Image 1 (spheres, rainbow, N blue to C red):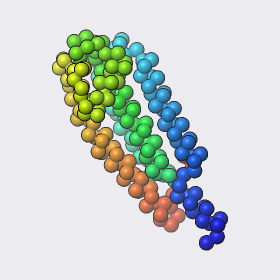
Image 2 (image 1 turned 45 degrees about the horizontal axis):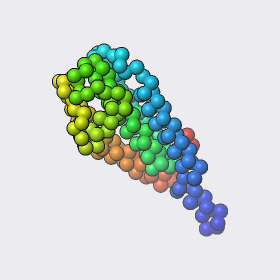
Image 3 (image 1 turned 30 degrees about the horizontal axis):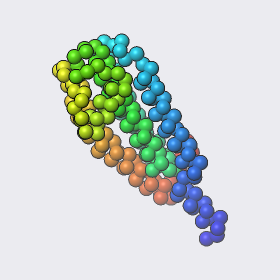
Image 4 (image 1 turned 135 degrees about the vertical axis):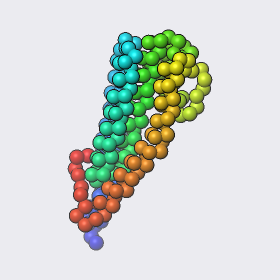
Length: 189
């Protein structure tokens, strides 16, 4: 094997620094866009129907996002890098979706939580529930708020286990496909 073939094989196995940097920039840009949207949306002018609809459509969008990301992982020449990108954008989307629901609920009914929730408070509360820390300084007080928090508690393990497992399986599937003679490669990354 000559030096040129060896370099080509290494380049195929590991993404270039430029590709990693580009992926990092896409993740940072996506998260900045999501957080900006979260903070500029007028969540304090909602209705119960709109809040529930937003949460249901958002969760459906989350499932669609994960499905799309799994598809791109499987067809990517660098599936592990694509999986990291997928998780790094999916988790913030999930957290901001629940944070938005909490802010809207707190505005609809000021007694929904132990205190008024700003956008930052909603995000803080969501992360404490997601991380299972639950400091207790903000608590759900009304039935509707408790149902939404319970919904997040039930879906959290899906994110912890199922989504990560699905991404890992997609990476393995892509790696098997690459190892096959004539394995598919996509340059869409």
